[in-house]
Length: 309
Image (cartoon, rainbow, N blue to C red; front, side, top):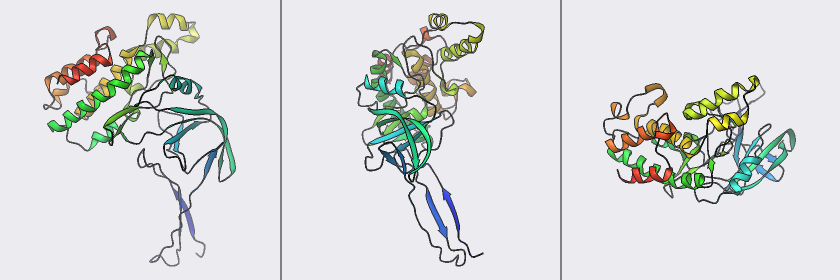
């Protein structure tokens, strides 16, 4: 065999270090001395250039890339998802722990100047950091300091969440990948507002693993729409507000301090991890109340409760 073998490898490493596609060329005639050539593949949407993107997530229809020469900005794009709602929502917000939106629209995606497909896109402030659950994955949750760190980070989540709710928005899609820890600042950022709505609105989509009971109930009603269930009837029967996000926060907090999912365990966290303080367990129980009226009422109240541990 005289022809060399070419192949591509794409791997998503960290949020702050997006993957690159490399072309590895090996001289098969001399395997003891391989020749490796690195080639960056260039992508472009309108004036925005990037090398490669995070692979399509299982719960989303959009890809994400950090822009070349402007590492403070990223681009999220999809052939069928309209980002205008997320753009205008973010333009209405101004908080250190919520990304800034710079641009949105539709453009042609090119790979090395070869046209591929039209894409909807949004350009955002890029948040360097770690998925909050991934950050704690290798830490011993039986360690008191780990639990204390988790409490501290969840306190930092409360400020942007209360700000968002005060603006009468509901994130509606809080889950591990949408809570990003910046280790330099020690702050947790809220990202991905694709499914966010105004309080009292109708859901645009759902991540079932981290959805509140009222979101799941609304989903059931929406499936009945062909049988003439009207949007107005749904929104008057089921009202989503800040407590919807707090239920999701409870699920994530439970997952971090137990390394188990509430949906599969349905037991008190102390039955899994006996190093959890009683006050923290009471807070988790208060977040995971099925009836929203019995739930911790606001991110502000959650912050006070966590600060008292």
